[in-house]
Image (tube, rainbow, N blue to C red; front, side, top):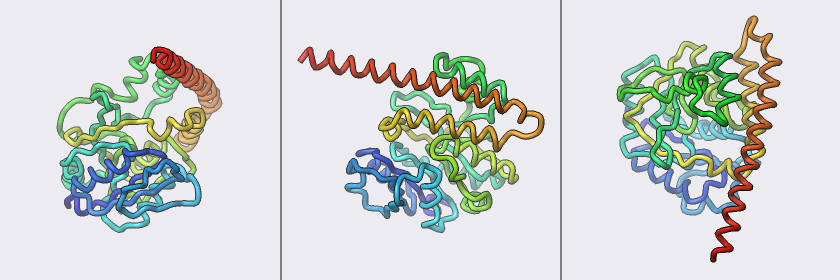
Length: 292
């Protein structure tokens, strides 16, 4: 296979000029077709985009939008992409080559870098109850804690493709046959955790997931979600709760009430962080205007 076997789905919501850049990068990377699914943008981000655009009746959320876009094509490989990605010219070819070399892999993801050049932990483990609890409560304020490190694998090394539990939905290449076998993304998730859920169901169906650090993208992050930060906090916790419920079995289900309580606490902490950041930003803006 080659990049010509890839159909890309880009989910857009108020991403501004980033969308057109992403679509252009995907074309330069050799992707055969790109479909944009727009979740109700009003910022003009669709201007200058010369690929098919699907416009659902309202904001469906991320996974639901990907499902709509994937249904528009029949390429054997589907590239799921955020609109605020900068895709290196050889990225898609590297991902395709990894799937070619590993027939048991349903999906692969690239190395994702932040705008500042740091490595984003895009290849992760399915967290244990202990790691999930520690990450949920400490990750907001002490991101280098051992629970978060166990979960996010920030020191994942090597340049060769390697098997992981799951890869970020910001950029992932998946075999259409595997995607359709498990029913695509679970549309009960609006935002967040739909990627880990999809990888979890692929594993249960007998597939594997790979990470390809030689393939790289840069992810600006937060362009779309910054428009509704408080709602995103709520949706994040709601999605984590859903995944906890569907992925937990046996005696571990007895701990679900504790999970629910922890997520409520985490939501409160996250909203406090959002409020603090907004106050700091407003203060800086005000001071900047006073200096003019």
